[in-house]
Length: 303
Image (cartoon, rainbow, N blue to C red):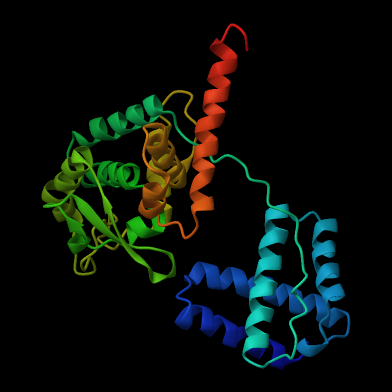
């Protein structure tokens, strides 16, 4: 494959970053998928994007399937190819989009791992007990966990929070979500108490010249990173008997599921979670229905 198609991929990456506001993680995923595609067609002697046909795209996906790629991976790569070739057509790089009729295997819609309400309550109690020693990181971990569960925000959104993103007057937090879309999410009294404990007793123990406005800090004073948040949640979950080791994203799933189980409106939950599509939020109704079905089969005499 010559350099020109790779240059188009880099231009597409700039489009994702500047015009679409995609995260660095999303950009890397797209670029990896497209480089894989270009390497595949290049090995077949195709060195011009205009020469890529639907049959080549189908062969590319079939090759991945034969090599054991997961359905979700194949579906994502097909989506990457469609997005890129649609952009290439719109910008005049190619005359016609060969991916218009490209289909990929449907992703299996698996139910996300969630904690039961009593497991979540126990997890929060564990974090609160640990914070009783007023160690900075224990206070931080409690505040992060309470806020994750109270708001259902993503771990990437959590670590990006600054101190002025939290409004204690209204008990809301300003979140910068996917695609640089801002939203405001409410939180309750327990999260407010945990946050105040961190800000009043914990943050000052680790704050440094590199802290800036970051709400949550690591031991050396820099902004906490997602890896540290995951490690903290996993560590606390070890003290909850029989609970699944779900991590921060599982706390988000749990928050959404418990809201819907409590009667929250689906569209309100969609707005809170920052989902672009209501269909994404609806998977949590499947979780609730599946739990209801299991309870019915266990308890109903005529099940």
